[in-house]
Length: 508
Ligand code: MSP
Image 1: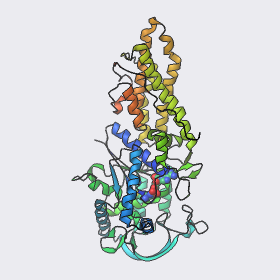
Image 2: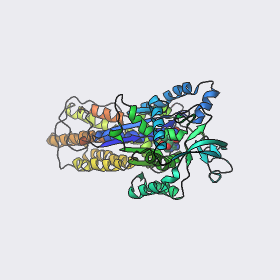
Image 3: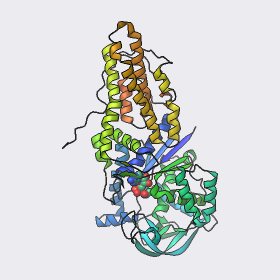
């Protein structure tokens, strides 16, 4: 059976979720749900990154032990996938015992690989706590990190280093042999030019910090947060299911999703570390752009935070998922706005999809007493519209084109609306001689909506289930259902309540 393992970056536990984090979680969930519908053996991982140096600092400011602080904050982060209706298979915490043990083993494997890939040296340099990375002078703007608007700190200590420089050639070979290793292509080129520019060894440990995973051969030092965090993608598989090691099942069938800010860590450091530790490199990495709000990157440091939980509270998880998938072509940078969310909610979800369901069910109830007759006509216009849908959507989602796949489904939603206007069932209902024609139109509408609901399951899990329920189908969401003629005769269809009711915003 084909395997599909998808991950989001693990989010810093000390920050609070904003819509940018929700963005990757939503994308990963859309891909995971979709692949499950296609019968693939799927695993979706998300979680939190707990060993950043900021965690210990913030905890101290609050008079807490880092662990107690992280225990509290992880609860906030667990709510994100849950409220977004993301069906993750595991939620990793890097303070899990299973993760800590695995990281120690992983680093020890690199140290023991016989190539002297880990060595001790003195490091002196400027360190940005925001990025959790050393910065070259050339990367600073007026002496501050442009990402975080703050001055880096001078750090000087004896650390353990990873010989990244030895992996320049193997990485270039990897990029040559696997042109789809990193997508989109322009991101692969970016990673490639970084590698070609020469790779510097980097420090994988920190001295004088008790918060972190102790280096197994030198417990006075802890693992550098990135050397610890990246390993989560592999460690989770060793303990997510008690008594089972999922590594054979899902590694290396992994698709890492991430935004461009952490491209180097994922596309350069991580494969090199895996090669050094004797593991296969990931199947693929997809680097998406930033979701901008009013043309500024949404981030806490810059102060334009949008709390996804608030938005879900007002519009519901489906609408937030829809807006994120639809506003910006996935992969590119782009802007989204709250006005855009309100607009899409009303026009696309409320009118295009919601009204289509209300009208279809109301007409079946009114003209046929709630009974739908089996009247499939393989040569109908709706049959033709549905014929290429399943493969078109699957093809786009296999290529991470979340936005394009949704647009393709929406073509059919619009097509169904045009079909109502063109066939005017209310006119047919007045003429007993056209009863068969009316049956066929109602069938095509119901069946078209059913097929669309199955296709939309990964984007709008709640609305999709409600549509299938309102049409009294058996709620089967297997991908084969994205096809014409899978609706059976049923009785008892009632006018469905609004799928996306109007929202009266306070103060508006
Ligand atoms: N903890 C590290 C990742 C370690 S993974 C081994 C980290 N955490 S983070 O909390 O800063 O999350 C970064 C990720 O959040 C990005 O890669 C991206 O997936 C998501 N995003 C955060 N802000 C975003 C936008 N404004 N737009 C799109 N995605 C965003 O980095």
